[in-house]
Each structure stands twice: as C-alpha cells, then as structure tokens.
Length: 589
Image (cartoon, rainbow, N blue to C red):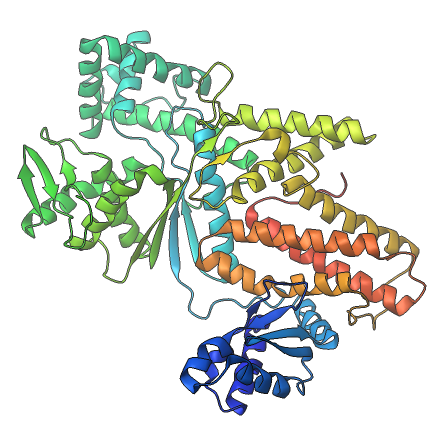
C-alpha cells in the first residue's frame, strides 16, 4: 500500500507540472507547524530561482490547482512561497479503511527483493553470567531482527559466543587444581568421556573469576593456563570434552536469561566454530600476498588513501602463532559466507569498538573473504549509565548481573501495580514481568542506539511520560473500552471508520496513517528509536481523542461503531509496533 506522503507528493507534483513547473519541486513533508497545516511543500522557494519570479507566484498558482483536488480540505499559499495542505477527512478515512482491510500488515508492503541478512548480537562469554553490559546488544539486535523480518528480509540472528581463548585455559587449569582426578586430565585416556558435566553453572561462574584472579598474581599459574589454551586449540581430547561441557552448562543458563528478555537467536555459534576455517584462511592470505610478517606478527595492511587518521594493520596471528579476536572474527565471516552467503552482516556492538571493526571489515573486503557487494555494517551503541552519568554499577561498585537488574525492576513494577489495584498475587507478578520488560526495552530503544543514556528505574517504570508502561497502559485502556462495548452489543457488519468528527479524532487518524512510512524508515536506518517516537505520538493522540470523546456514551450507533473501528485499528498498530520492539501488552494493569 502506497505511503500517504507519497500519494500526497504525487498529487502536488502533478499540480506543479500542470502549472508549468518541474515535478521535482512538488516534494511534500509533514508540517513543522501542525497548528497551521498537516503537510507542507516548500518547492516554490527553490523553483523561484529557475523561473525567475517571486516564490509566492508559483505557490499561488499551484495552490489554485490543488484547491480543485478532492483529496485536500484546503491548499493555501502563504508568503513568501509556502504551500500549506490539509487532507480531506473522507479521503483520510478511506485510507485508514484500506489499512484496516489488510489485517496482518495494515498496508505495510513486504520488500520486493528480500535479502539474507545475518545479525551478530549478544556476544556473551561462556562460563560468565550475563551482566548489564550485555543488555543493549541483545535488545537492539532483537528489535532490528524483528523489524527486518516484518519488512520481508531473511534475518538470521547469531549470538556469537565467546568460547575460545585464554578464559577456557583458565577454567581448565582451575578445574585441574580442584579436581585433579577427573578423567579429562589423563593424557593417554582413550575411552568415552562422561555425559554429565563435572560442575554446575554456579560452580562454573565461581571458577572463572577465581582463576582470573590467580593468573594476575601467579605467573606460573598463568603460564599453565596459556599452555592449556594452546592444547585445547590444538585438539587435546580431554580439554575438548571439557569445552563441550562448559558450553552445555553455560548455554542452557544463557538461553534462560535471554528468554526472560524475550530475546532469541537462530544460531548459537561461538568463536570455536570458526577455528576449523583459520588455517586455510591464513594460508590463502599469505599466498595472495596480503599477509606479511611485521615485528614477528602476521598482519594485513588496511589503510586507505582517504583516511584522515592512521588505521593500523589488521593483525592475523601473534608472533607465537596464536590467533586473536581479529582472526576469529574473520574466520567467522568465512563460515557465514560459506553456509549462508548473506547479502549483509550487521554487528551490534559497543561503539568504542568501531576502529577494530573498521580493520576487520577492510581486511575481509581486501582479502576477498566477502563479495564486493556484500555489506558489512557496524551498528555501534552507546553506554548505559547510572544516574551519576557513569557506566551502570551495583551499589558496591561492581558490574550488575543482568538477572538481578531484571528482578529488581520486576519487583518495582509489582509494587506499583499492587499499590494502585487490588489484584491476585500471581496475576500481579505475571503482569509486573510483562510491564517491567516494556520499561527496560522501551527505556533503552527510545534512545538513538549510538548515544549514551541514563538508566533511570524510577522514570522508566512510570505510567506517565515517554515510557513503556505508558504505552502499555494506553493499549490496556483500549482493551477495556472494547470489552465494555462487546459486553453491551456487537459491532454491526457494515461498521466502518468514518470521517473525523473532531480535530482530536483527525489528529489520531493522521498518526495512524504514518504507520507504513515509519516501519520503512526504522528498517532503512536500523533505528528502533523511530518506532518508539511514533508509538509515543500515537498513544498521545489516542489519549487526547479519548479524553475529548464519549466513546461508550455516544448516542449515534453508527458514529459509535466508527469510533470502535478506529480504536481497533489504533490498538493493532500499537501491538504490531511493540512486538517489533520485543515486548507485549497484558490484558489489564
């Protein structure tokens, strides 16, 4: 279904043409003065130079033509040469009726040329609990994946586990000290290893920090860990079996935590999955003349003539032959291209890693790991800070576990719900979880991804203002009205959205009409915050209409039925949007 702004622009361009001017001057935008008009065209200002006349002479002529167009309620020329436009209410109602007829997508067309897009988000390390630093990647990545799918692309989400490197060697070393008799440490053992892991998730989460602490104080211990890492990476059977146990226990716990955030991944691949591709990749880089030895390390130059600042070479192997994050990320691109051949790979990562990903992307392009047309995109996000403006910490100054943060917001939300309403405890707790998730996700996503923001629990859990709970409260209000109407009567078959009876109703209808345009914009700019801004405006427009209109007390049954149809469409738009943001609305609050 054509976007309403495109339809209006087409009509204005035709009017420009009919007036003897070029169509290009007929571009229409939303009005920046909604008190004066709904849409505006400033093309006469630019056209005046070409046609050597005053701008208002052009806008006067075009306005006169548009005044005969039944699409517009009014078309006014305002000096020095602006075109101010208002839509005809019947036309707007018809546009919304067409939206409403498309029950599933509300007139938002799927893309004509679907692309395969891999999205790398999450990035947790195994054997460690998720902490607040993992929140933004998960929430932003999940929303972008959902928006992309709604638009019609084949979106493939990969968690990209940190399951390789020294941390694995540290865990193995500490486990060997604690449980030296485990069969995994017998070098000549040839039998089957136990199916059950020799540790729980709680033990595993305690083992790693203990081992990390020891390695910083004991050089011999660190050397043992590095040796264990080397043996693991070179295929020692017992250590490989331990790695599988670590993954088994850790991934189960990670999945549980991500499910609590309503975040899911299509692939649970890790750095270890890229290891088999490293030798051939490195060899080819050498043979093709891209990789060379510099100060003992193997590197690839990635600087370009246009660089304003120095871009260091991309290191492929350290001087001792060990791989790095660069190596693993490049090898990950190799297997992604081999198995999925994506048109685009999006990395949702802390914006402070931009230089690193510039090196990796350039290296991948230069060495032919991806096709020239394959897009590698870095979506860097800002820091989630506490009220003091510094990275979010616990009261003790440590990094807060993500499940503790979620739990504390659940409790805060339950307290607010219980204080305001008489509810059964179980229903209250379930509702609190749903509303708390909206507070967390909307609080994050309503900010432009690249910007730092203050994580303010009091503000995010408020039922007023630009918050998730406010959006949900608006949807629940609609559900309540619909239920009361349905309990009293049934909607007539001939019921339809009618032309607006008031300015507040028309304002609501205008907001609804922006839906497919906002979806397209949010996808093209990988900008979930645009979806948040839209639903906040839509919720405000609905609440303004609600407070001015006696929906359930309306005596004219046809008018009332029209209100109900409009309310149903508004609710559907909001429900689609919050699903794309990764949360849902309860039945009541």
